[in-house]
Image (cartoon, rainbow, N blue to C red):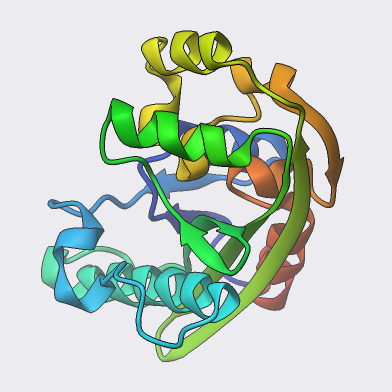
Length: 203
């Protein structure tokens, strides 16, 4: 039996809330700099890379990078959980908006259409790394320019893949969801529970 605590390598308050929701005991393991600024955890979309391969690669890289911090920081080694979420719109990866203008463009593209939300989770302990992938389909109703403008002005889209948060105001935009609600938020709880069990976590 492993230690009954894990590390969560994420700055996302939503992922913390979801992990706590299923009774997982964890400590935060944060990178001193944003992981995307470290070459070992590059979030650049590689040529020819599918959205599935992209999100799995980034999640695994985050978990491996975080696990490597144990030695540097003289920490007790425990399993570390990391995740990455991205949107796939017609084969194109849609990440977090660069600014308000970018958020406005993204939401305009999502309006009245379906897209896929992919969240990969990865767990690392020692040399072992495992991952799982959750894919959901989300359909937006038609949005007016004024709705988009007001939503962007709320600030909610700015740190979220696809420029919206299903757990926030954007829930009013969503006509249909097929898949994992928690996966769209950023941590698919079914897959997370199964991955934790693989590592012997008592759930």
